[in-house]
Amino acid sequence: MSSSPSSQNTSPSSALSTPAALWRLKPFVRPVVWRLAGGAASALAAAVIALMIPIVLEQIIRGPVQSGEIGAIAWGAAAVFGLAVGEAVMVWLRRQFVLNPATEVEYQMRTQLYSRLQTLPVAFHDRWQSGQLLSRMMQDIGLIRRWLAFGLVLLVVNVLTIIIGSVLLFRWHWLLGTIFLVTAIPLWIRGYLFEKRYGALTRRSQDQAGDLATSVEESVHGIRVLKAFGRGKHALSRFSRQAETLRETEMSKAGAIASIWFWLDLMPQIAFGLSLMSGIWLIAQGAIELPELFAFFAMATVLRWPIESIGFLFSFMLDARTATDRVFEIFSETNTITDPEHPLHITEPRGELAFENAHFRYQDAGAQERDLLDGIDLVLRPGETMALVGLTGSGKTTLTTLPTRLYDVTGGRVTLDGVDVRDLPLAELRQHIAMAFEDATLFSASVRENVLLGRADLDIYSEEGERVLREALGVAQAGFVDALPDGVETIIGEEGLSLSGGQRQRLALARAVAAKPRVLVLDDPLSALDVDTEALVEEALRHVLADTTAMIVAHRPSTVALADRVALLEAGRITAVGTHAELLKTSRHYRHVISSLEAEEAARTGAIPIIRDADAELEEIDAADEERLTEEEVQA
Image (cartoon, rainbow, N blue to C red; front, side):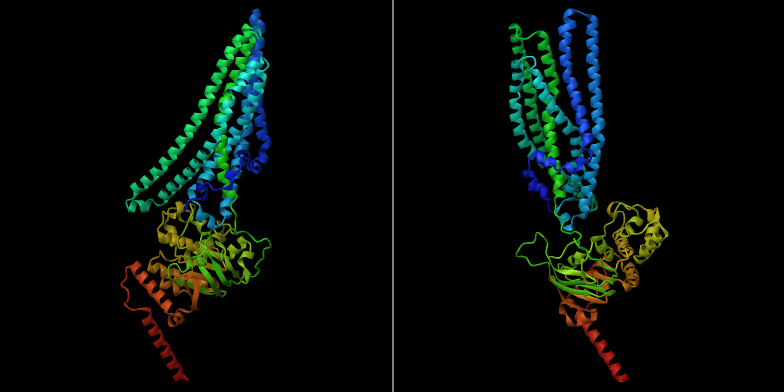
């Protein structure tokens, strides 16, 4: 699968300023904004209390300490202790205010992002790596939550603390305050340069972490293949290269942070040194007194942590901005498969499925390439079973994705009972049409939940649910579930890999049958079954398909036998429609396809193929027709 667009950093969100990028969180933050404001107010109150302590200390030194009044000193100490307790209480309140709202924002973002992923079309998931989506869902949203609860509040409060404290520094002498402010100018310059470099590094790091998550996921899902081919070391080597690339990016980030921390540590020390020399000179000149110089340095000490924290909080903000960009790349994706503005409804479904001059091409197809489906005209009558036959690449599987709007036609239309499927609500459309794929996908849930996945209208644990479950399992010849440890309540492992391919395919077929659709679309659903089981399933399917319209992609001659008619696809077009016997007579390409299917079936089963071709079968059919005609003439 190709890398996600995000890994190329081409999102228009990267052109936004940091405040504008973070402002997009407003809809999620609005319901809890007052709680967050309460947290900020508590944090600011704690900072103001801390700034009051140097002023109180000045008064203690100026009064009781210089006069030697022990009782007054004790009261002064009690006042400082009370302020310290008040600061601690405000810090505690800050945490109480912000923690719950931040987790609420995280919950809302995560559930809405998951909902978005469910509604985006299959074409979106074709382009995006699963690891990139997973890292956004877990890592990025978690980082946004921590920034809202901690980084945002402290950044605002610490900036205000620095401003208020800097103004108070001028209370003792303008020269001392000026020195403190002038020495902060290099920090602002370094902060601007830091944002440019660190923002790019953060984006690269988070994208690389998503790529690494994809590699882990693919390796875990493909562990059987890696072990079978002895390619564990190869996978490890590839993973190590990606991990090393991520490590190098993280080291570059650490270098950028170290650079800003160097200036954040250096400039306050220079400010302290210059202020000390200036303060001593001012005392010698009689411009200030010792208690005032002491209070100045106490205030500067209080300001030191807010100043030093700015670098960390600034980098934290840039991390949150990048995480926000990555999450909103998904929210901003255009959903092309949506409910119609003015939906139509089918009140009495009959199950007639029709393709009218249907065209389809993938979004990334070149302008010079022909359509993958190039003018399909095909009608499936109500209750009819139609087999789709064609060579590899003829467009069979792509055709099956159009009725349920996994993809939309790029030309023409697909209709259900005369209604364009794009005019039906998606929920209603997918209630009328069910699918079973060749690659059976199961979920980490019980057998019951997997089979009855398409029956949202049904209590799966009711008597009716049990009856539907057993009927579907019977049709799919999935009696093996009763031998599982907990029967139908057995939890299937991730993607059903604890089951055999045939078992997974039978459960997927049972899921499609249990949905009770008017139209059933089957993409070679029996390919993993053995010959005996396939025969039993086909016999059961004949009863199910008696009143259900079905479109079956046939990769085996036995599957063709299920069909009332056969449609032949050739290079994206329907070139012939008829019964198996009719097409054998009239279409040389159909005879070639059937011969290919028979050869593939013989290779798959290990059987010795009968040495004859489709032309020989055609001669037998002609002989049988001639014999039948002769008998009719005799009777006449």
